[in-house]
Length: 348
Image 1 (cartoon, rainbow, N blue to C red):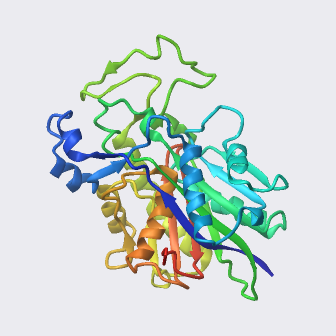
Image 2 (image 1 turned 90 degrees about the horizontal axis):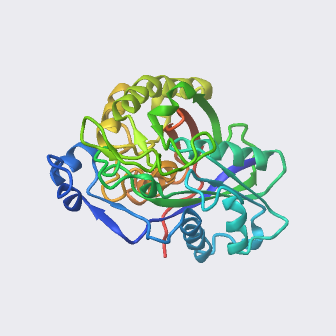
């Protein structure tokens, strides 16, 4: 029986760093120490002035190729998750296929999803492999949210960092009826779309001189309609309401208990939210990854980056079963179980 399996993961972070000390000079009352205590973030990677999501995705994939884990010629499908594409069209995945020298006989597509994007991407890749449409798939996530954020937005700017990841997913023969990726549970609530949104720039509200006008809200945040708006309290309430039942649902669907899961890796939103979710999901004392100290919230890349970091720290080991949970912009959420065949560490 053909089963999709995560073979390995690499990630790339831009060289430029934005520190808490720099931000504390701009935001009155937001001290460097308070950002670490509340957000769990000390610094975040920010893309260069001419660095795009495709550029970062390419750098992540080349790290995978440099480790000789696969060659471009082996890849027969490329799936690219981003909400900050290089162009409205063509598809970013097509640009990346050409840059990487992946065969023209390969498929390539983009999908637009944020913090739950990695979970959805795994489902797409599993479907491609287990239906026989592909054998070796690259799932790339890449975001440059910093380009959407006003420098004077004290809610969003301290939180988000830029980054990219690539996951190599292969088809393997197995006698085990239990999937190596899955099962999955998904959820969507579009009524919360305005909680995390860039209002202008699409066809609904095209960019104009009017949408570029900056306004200050009652908390001192500055932004225009061309820039990212986040209702922090609303997103927090959404996560607190939806994620504990989601954890229960994926356990019930898989027939497993909390003790059967070797490591829990949630979307790395911020320390305060993750601490609260750990408590509400009854995961105290279990292997639960919570570390974005020098990365920030990297949106769709946060879960795969956390998987590599958890492996490096000895929390995620070969043959472990991990629960992956993503949630955020959309509103969208999803969870999956994955079984890892090998260490994700770069041993070179």
